[in-house]
Image (cartoon, rainbow, N blue to C red):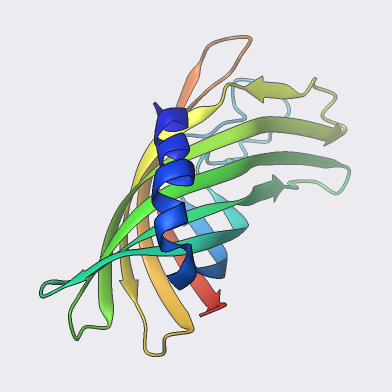
Length: 194
């Protein structure tokens, strides 16, 4: 489903709107989700590594779709890298990372600094990596699909801040244990090539 939507956007939507499009760089911080290390290590010292928590950096493309009396609509396509680590002791570390992509439809009411958006997310390369004294094997997770809702606010056209609510579910490939991640995130975006 995600692949079909992406194909439609790339071959039918983008060619008709690229002349007005612009790129952006985004930094995100997410919080929340089930503890993802408790089932894979006995030496965690009761540590907590939420499945949805992490810091992400992404780049993307904003494509204006329509301007009307009710406001403007735009499509945001982004891909980047999300990461978090945990070091309860100096000789051990756990890393949780993945490549994150998103397709977001944003509506901004006319004469307003606010915007609302809904989107689809896809996380691939989901790896839980143990280093140091935690001699566990790395744990792989299946690609995860999710949904997101966004509230955006901007004072100047070049920058915007976002409050994002997302839900994904990560499933370990070996054990098939699922780890739901309902996350609340804060983001800062810089737009260029206007």
